[in-house]
Image (cartoon, rainbow over all chains, first blue to last red; front, side, top):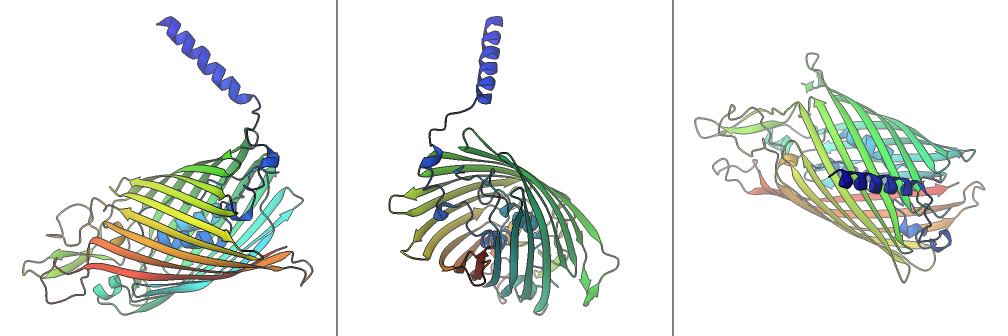
Length: 76
Length: 384
């Protein structure tokens, strides 16, 4: 049992430390031209999308977690 | 007055979060939007302007200001069932915000204030977004705090003996991930808690009187509500320069409501300056535990609601949009601009909310209610 705990601990620490190291992106910055295209924007017109969300939210029981998480293409 | 919505603070926060930068490591573009919106359905017409302006400073800061108005003219089924006549009212909302870029992180602060003659809502927001893992991943965290003050109109003036409050907190975490050179996926999770006065001071429930008729009584809601919403989405770049977008949300709360939302969108640029869009949306929900269309008695249970937003229902939306880009230069500080027109048509179908305006049938056997709505947005955007 003790060995299992130690192994688990070592594996966890290794994984945590590996998360701190730099990651070589599998999609290079120069390969993100399509993702940066305006038609791929998470929210091309915020003033419009927020209004439409409001239309729905005012008439539905559900709320929250609408739209994108705010991520982008990291092209710059 | 019978107010159609008591969800202003959620919208305020939404307007703030929607102004979050699309890239954690890049500030949003300097831009101004002027929008006219119009909703028409179910005896309710709401229209008005919306403005959103963003301006950056020294490539470190981006400031935003927003202004939004709802001009309401309502003869909804709730108004007619209560025996009231059509009413008009106005809601005005102001917002300010700031983004601060530091390395690959963006910090966002914002505040909005919304006013109606019988409802005041103040909302403050803080968020942080961070690019990581070779800028393939963006993680966002957000917290919103809202303070509502609820009052009531009686006979055309504010009831001095009625003043209630509600506190709301929203916690949000999101992640966006580049998967391939054509595909981005995102996920978000949001918890919202309310504590205070949550029902509408004007809306009534129906109960069966001893003579077999339907009578009205005041709603009684719980004083707390906590909801969880989890969403996932993708955006895919098609080989011929078009975009396909999908989004799904699962929602559940402590009132017993569970809902599913699915959305599909297609964006197609035309040669030249046009971008066309089409979208479909499906929504369904189960009722709150304390909802009934017709209660046997007023003391049937502790909490009573007959708000159709808390009933079991579904809705479908079909929408189209067109955007035309025009060149800048006039005046010189305008880089470019767009003229946009969006139209959405919504079908609402209720499974256990009946049309109580119908007479001549026993209470509880009226036809189920349904209605359709048109939503129009016309707006101009300029980049500077």
